[in-house]
Length: 212
Image (cartoon, rainbow, N blue to C red; front, side):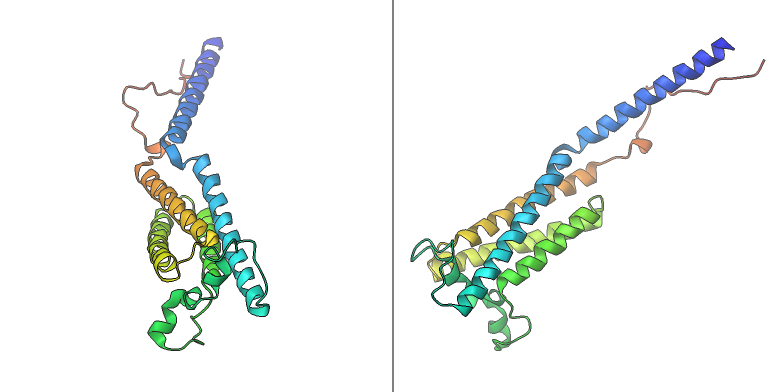
């Protein structure tokens, strides 16, 4: 009958209205960890990967040609190649100190560690952006990365007395990614599925009755 058809149409409209509102509420509750967070994080992972790749390239070129001048070699006290080829440029200066072997398998250029680090965590971010476990893993990883940034920053300023533009840029990328991952962790903690959302005080559509 026409009355039953009106009831069906009314329930359909109410259902769509509630669904759209709940979806919008979920998007708003994402806060800083919404689409802007996602693309900003991906961009920073790519920047970190690019900086590490460039540092590795500079190091290889400097080893093959001592007269090579990198773009980041701005002055005597602003030379990135000088930093990359120092004893702290491989294994963070710690592998040789702990093992006493400069040819140890772990005594790789810091830039190589950076390439692996940003590539791996970038893939984890893209493939498992909704996982709390991966969010905790990424947050812990960037806590360690920022700890290493503080250590290398101390070496850079007080020991080598240099100002490496690439190094400082990498420290900044690590800090920004730490903030974004902290934001993501908080967002996942507060996130509530729209299906489990309480419905007290809301109109819930009902199926029409076709009984005579």
